[in-house]
View 1 (cartoon, rainbow, N blue to C red):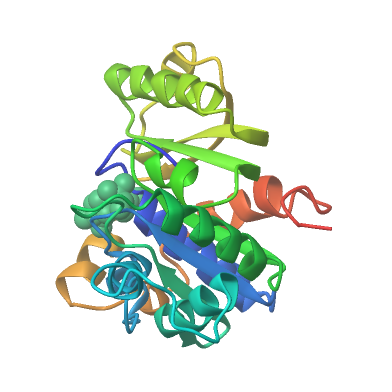
View 2 (view 1 turned 135 degrees about the horizontal axis):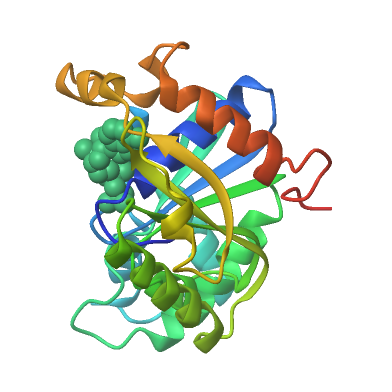
Length: 252
Ligand SMILES: Nc1ncnc2c1ncn2[C@@H]1O[C@H](COP(=O)(O)OP(=O)(O)O)[C@@H](O)[C@H]1O
Ligand SMILES: [Mg+2]
């Protein structure tokens, strides 16, 4: 997931995850790659630690890897503490991208670790920050499906275009990319908006009062009623653009 802040990336990551879990698509790794991490809240799961926090523990202060450990095993040992195991999926929270120190070395190790970790799952869902920084620093550059989320506005569409350019500038390998127009009020025709983007349109997701009520009641995304309008739209989104009728979004 990509797109500017407040457009609904985290909410939609949660809803897509729920859809995959309910369809028994497993194993799934969901990654919160926004430094302002709040995916856990949306999912109702608390990660025991963040990758960024553990990196500091592992590399600052001691800075040395303890004798008897090779680098990769050490990082794997440390990072395992960050993984939250939930019902039907695991959650990994990246946390802060950089502390005061220089982490190039640690970040390279981390990237390798996350690549290796991701191979253990059939699905990796990633909720990113608007700038996509984490995608370059910590994680694989290979993406099957990138969903760029926006609100239904012309300015939102311009941001979509910038994110789209950023994806190329960063040299990410993205097989399919789509724009998702979220929080669409009833009766609004988004066709005119879509003329402002070069990306293929995927789904429009309606503005859903049930999301608001669910949030106010302090409930997670798994508690959202089956009849919620956003759920139906996400179901269609998963069918067409994630599962892709066949296996478009699924790793071999
Ligand atoms: N389709 C929707 N209908 C109603 N509210 C929504 C919808 N999508 C997201 N929201 C609300 O919008 C706010 C921002 O969503 P969030 O997922 O945190 O965005 P982001 O992760 O892009 O910053 C949240 O309060 C969320 O509950
Ligand atoms: Mg978010």
